[in-house]
Each structure stands twice: as structure tokens, then as C-alpha cells.
Amino acid sequence: MNNAVSVSCIVPAYNEAPRIGAVLKTALLTPGLDEVIVIDDGSTDGTPDIVEGMALRAPRLRLIRQPGNGGKARAVQSGVSAATTNHVLLLDSDLVGLTPAALTALLRPVTEGHADAAISLRRNAPKLWHLLGLDYISGERVMPRHILANNAAEMAELPGFGLEVWMNHLWIAAGFSISVVHWPGVSSPTKHEKRGRLAGIGADIDMLRDMFRTISPISALAQIHSLRRRRVGLPPDTAA
Image 1 (tube, rainbow, N blue to C red):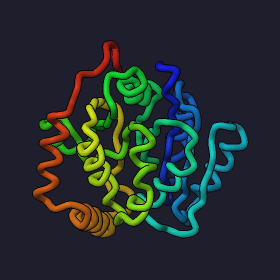
Image 2: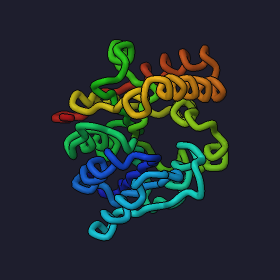
Image 3: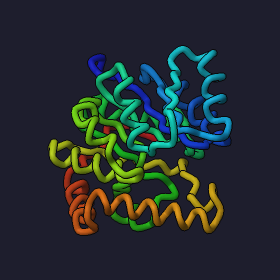
Image 4: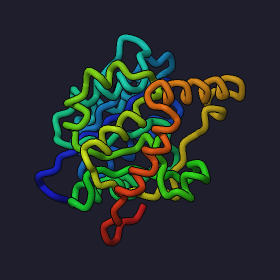
């Protein structure tokens, strides 16, 4: 790893008590992460208690409690503001099958200087994303911290599910080269699985609404095209 690169792992979480412990254990076992910051977004289950219990045994783990459920963008903004490093790894708190090897594979293109940013392509990402070789709304990303910190006020005002497409805009404007890292063993539960069928459908509708409040459908297509053009090869021996 390039000694000039330091990385904070930022984990926004809302009611993820069944899954967050395994995600954090993996992050804490991954070399090269200087700190792990969990931002609890007003959970009503045992999520913050689990994190606090783990933090007692892991000095690199910190918990930030949001005053209420303000959405993912505000949670990430709080984490970025608290981070002490020059790069960040954004990590969803509900991943299944995550391993230190998968996280290392996502970090390496950036920490070794092969790319400016990296993004995951999970096993259960939509088939279209696999055909395109890019999940443009993936929540697992590595990037320089300043790209978010310099736009913190704007990030805090984003609609809840507008964060990923907004980050895409920043990456494209900055001219970032991007590594897409395949995660064949990692998946993310669907909203239907976590919330039930009707609530899951409602959550999917909310996600699309927030995305297209942030950018238009035409702009989303343009983002996909631009991000695919900016892909670079992975470093040798990268394995997820």
C-alpha cells in the first residue's frame, strides 16, 4: 500500500442489527483501514448498541449517532466530516458474504495508484449492470475524501437515495479514472427481503424518486456511458 494513502471506512446504518456486526467485523479485520466510523441514522432496533459493544474492544471503531433519521446522504456527510484520513471507503451496513479479501480488492486500485476511485459490482447486482460491467448506484466505493468534504453542504441537502448519482457527477467532473471491482461472493439483501413485499415496493419507488429528483433519467444514462469510458484495468492479482 502507498504510505501516503490513509483510509477511513464510513458505514451509514439504519436498523441493521441482524447484519451490521458481521460487516464491521470484516472491516476491522481488513488491513489498511485506519478507522471505521459508523453513523447510526436514528435506528430503532439494537444497531447502535451492537456498534457500541464492538467499539469497546476495537479502538479503531467509532459510533456517531444522528439526532433522527435524516437519510443516507446526511449520515455519510457526518462520517466524512469526522474522518481523519485522506481517502474514504463507503460501505453499506447490510452486506452478506463480505470478506477482508473483497474489501482489500476494492481498496487496492486506489491505494496502489492504479485508479482515482473504485466501485463494487456485487453478485446480486441487476443482470443489466453485469452486462454493462458497472453498477452505477453501488454503495461500496473508495475515493479521495476531499471530493466529498469540499461539497459537504450540498451533500447534506440531497434526497435520501440521491447520494450515489450525485457522487457519480462529482467523479465525472473531476475526471476520475475508475476501477470496477467484481464481488462474486458478496450480495446485498433486497428491500423486499428486509421490509416485506409491500414496504419493499414502496422503498424501491422512493429510491427511484430520489434518484430522479437529483438527476434526470437522461442524465443517468449519460452517467453510465461516461463512467464506463473512465474504467481502467485492475492491478495484478486483485481477487475479491
